[in-house]
Image (cartoon, rainbow, N blue to C red; front, side, top):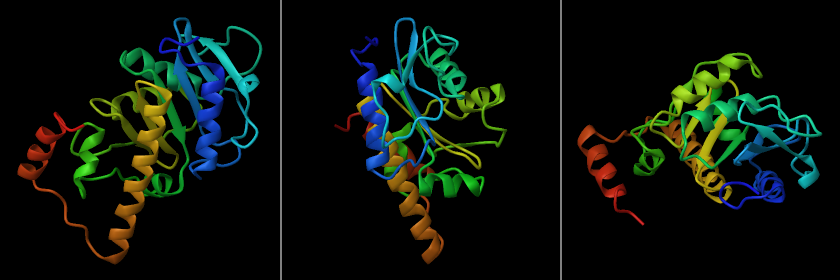
Length: 210
């Protein structure tokens, strides 16, 4: 059982839901939740349409497996994020179309809409490109996530954090939706960005929103 009552089946169900929502394909991306020993994370190579609890691997806090199964090759990145951000209970990493398209431009998501501020600040950063599956990716992801609940990874995809699996999934859906709206706005012209005063007012509003 995970720290927040999450289970291996809940991790699998979240990954399946990513596939149902069209936010991932084949074996792209991974999902995890924090446990007292480390994490539960989808195994390497499993697919969203067929994943079950048997495809979820328990690891220690460094991302090393505690039993059978090979965890995602990016388990170390999840481990780095959990170590850096103790309030994080779950992580969704996906290669969704619009977030990945924006990441392949090497760009983050600017404050074109006030809902961007819901991720913790005036933008969603894009971490520089490094080869997937390398330790450097974890370090860059941690930096891009500073004071944020989401980031993009250049030429790769998105990472979204939550206190629970449901919250991390909701964050991923919101990020993909806003990335799509931003790219649509850019296709029609130059989006108007919020001013510093508008950003400050919206951030203050978010403190009591909901």
